[in-house]
Image 1 (cartoon, rainbow, N blue to C red):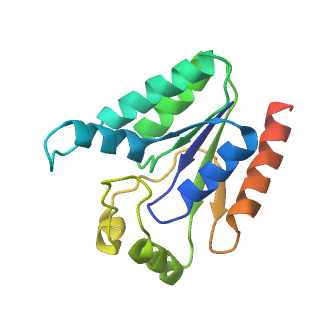
Image 2: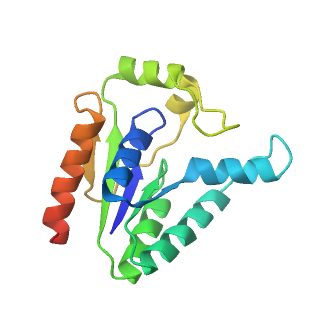
Image 3: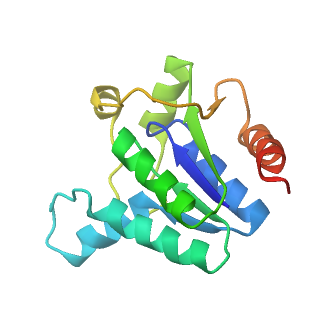
Length: 170
């Protein structure tokens, strides 16, 4: 199965995705890790475009072909990216679940953004102004939405697992 996470930085998406990956012993693929590895391989300050997502797509595809459950962790801020992950799962005849993590409490979200420390060496996390200015396309289909202002990370994972068992016949 493919779990496709999306949401703004600081929403709690990586925390939830990691817990889900641990619970399922799934392959965890995070675009921030890929992008930082690319930056580290080049000169300092290089701007990374869609390359990180292209790498993530292929890693997801290969691991799904091997029969692994895969959790992808990225902002997924445009429908083209969201569609590509779905198309990979569909082409491989693998069930998928799109999960959008958000924090409805702006004060709490801002606190998280301003106080988080990257767990990826060298990665500079966006500040609050960058998070607020980020373009995030409206969704064009249903997805599981989880609000980390009202749900703990563990509660989010429990809901994901309950939905995926129903939808995927586990």
